[in-house]
Amino acid sequence: MSHSAPDGLSAFIAGLPKAELHVHHVGSASPRIVAELAARHPSTSVPADEEALAEFFTFRDFAHFVEVYLSVVDLVRDAEDVRLLTYEVARDMARQNIRYAELTVTPYSSTRRGIPGPAFMEAIEDARRAAERELGVTLRWCFDIPGEAGLEAAEETARLACELRPEGLVSFGLGGPEVGVPRPQFKPYFDRAIAEGLHSVPHAGETTGPETIRDALDALRAERIGHGTSAPRDPRLLEHLAEHRIPLEVCPTSNLATRAVAALEEHPVREMAEAGVLVTINSDDPPMFGTDLCTEYGIAARLLGLDAAGVAELARNAVRVSFAPDDVKKSLLGEIDAHLASWPA
Image (cartoon, rainbow, N blue to C red; front, side, top):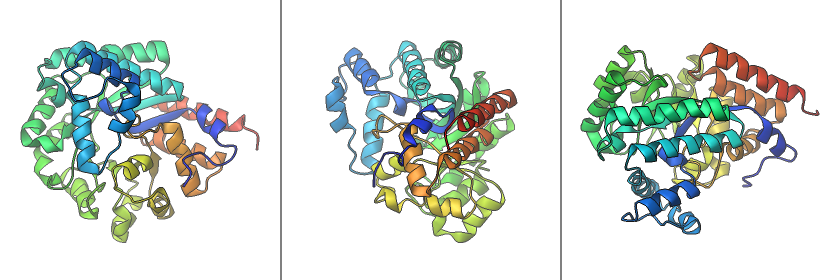
């Protein structure tokens, strides 16, 4: 299946003001930034060459993706690295007309490598303020537990989120492998975060079945589901998601790259949409998967058979179910409407 937008839609998508809800901090490091970090910290296994990174980012399966991802995480060694990465991710977003993004950040990965919690918070917040001021990109944070690191990581992530809560933090998540990492064990940490006013947005049903999504809903009180790729295998679950307006954060190319789906044309996003589920389109770890949000919108337009108006509605979905302040939502929805109105029929 083509990764390009249907005829005539590429320019519309490129100019469309967008929000992104499922995109990872380290996973958004462009080859240029990864190469720069690898050159600064040459003891790692990551090549300090942009061309070699393309081969490095070719994944055999989800487990191999996690292995490669963690090797890139290891490049972020100090607060200066954190600030550089965060601001440069926002710069890449600005080039795509992404106006608002909820960036999934894994602070445990940095604090366990010796970056003090307060310094980490200061670095991301400084980058956030600069991105809004200089690039016109509004960033908010989701602090996520790296599931493969277990309950120690969950405890530390909850502590950092609740005791050192930065101004931009809006939600609490759970990423990493799903196989062998049951969702219910993380309930106490999500309960604590929710009690502090954070929203629950765990990954679920990406590489496991719909029962993982049910666990995320029941034990973690999920308000949105990261991926949810297996949801259509349970029609009653799909009905529940649709009835209760629980959005899915769909990342088509990511699912292909990690072998969560065998081929793009087999992606279940059409089944999700036809069941009335609120679907948002996202890029997950874009440079690692050789994609960006504009590309993902083009793929979604093909899979869902959308015209410009349909693509604009996808963009509105992301804004409406985001945790953005009301004034940001109103402004961004107005920009989307104006972009569509100015587009030739």
